[in-house]
Length: 202
Image (cartoon, rainbow, N blue to C red; front, side, top):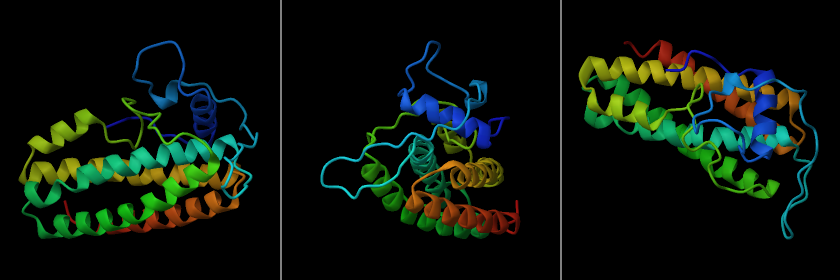
């Protein structure tokens, strides 16, 4: 679990980090909150030939490049539920969230493709708020029963809360309307999923 959370200022810092393709001095693991918070970058990002022109700025790209691995990693965690818990409410919750997260990925990837940014995971190996790490997966994967339920719920809550925060940041600072609309949809979805989580039982 990560103690810090990413708000709008740190999303701006992530923008600069991602545009630079995370080329920075220091270790491979970059806690997001350790980066400074420069003003939001509003330069447009050119789209490749044959795609629909847009007004993507660096914040749009940063949000997409963050949300895709966050969603992919949470899916891996949620997919452990059928084998690791005997709590039917947790199993049902996990199944519902798996369906929702899977439905979001094609839209996120399509918008990233339209932006012209690379589809590679620029956050590979990063330990960030709301991001399920390989170590998280190992720890949760070894747990069963009530212990698994607690770990899943804790990781899921952090992931959903962080998704709400960064999606608000995209709506405030993004430029491409389609990305901002998807961020608004995901903010609403994550908020509703948090409500489900609160009623799931622990």
